[in-house]
Image (cartoon, helix red, strand yellow):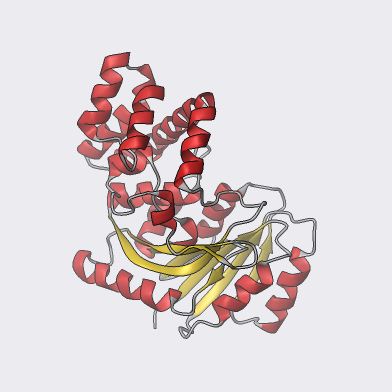
Length: 309
């Protein structure tokens, strides 16, 4: 069986982290390890983690950062400091279904048969949205947010990340590309950065199955937002959306600086033009979006994009 490293990051997660670990340990797939990187918790998170490490010394390894890195760099740094056949990412407050590892690995192996193990590959799945007590809010993250998870080509991912990080599996070939360069400063989220690597150098597959319970509570860094709440937020925070769009373009510019020499010319052009959208005039900016399909999910989101870009 292939070795899988499950990378979990924690920060003040004492309330839910034990339940998350227990759900992973219940998996019928046995050849995995859980590598946990705590980002300087000041509650009892480390005490809980150390107890699990003592109970399962062959499975669980716990590390604590000397300085707080933030969730994005904590994940990316943890990935670079592990060595495995496959990698899965894990938040501290969700619950994994027992079949999460087997069904995701099955899809990964199908991709490797099609594209080869040397191709950087990523798989992501759907998730059941639940409240803090695990009551179901929606059976599908993507249906509730009106997002199309199948549009994972590079132009779409530059504008709108589709990968739910806590559902992602990727292979050693993708990790090799990530580790070969310094960690980014402008990456907005770790899953978005991994998605850009896979879209630029390899392949991405979406598995239309909910493999976990995605817990929503007041302390989530990133969570599920239903579509009506999304529209309301966009209408009332236009300046914030403009700032986010610029941050997404800075992310693309840094991605091009780090990996540009390694990628095909057409991918380099797509990323470069997206990174410089803010420099284009009113008409050209919108022409570039339509020409290269730097688009979001659905008509409403894209109408909003054309207004605020």
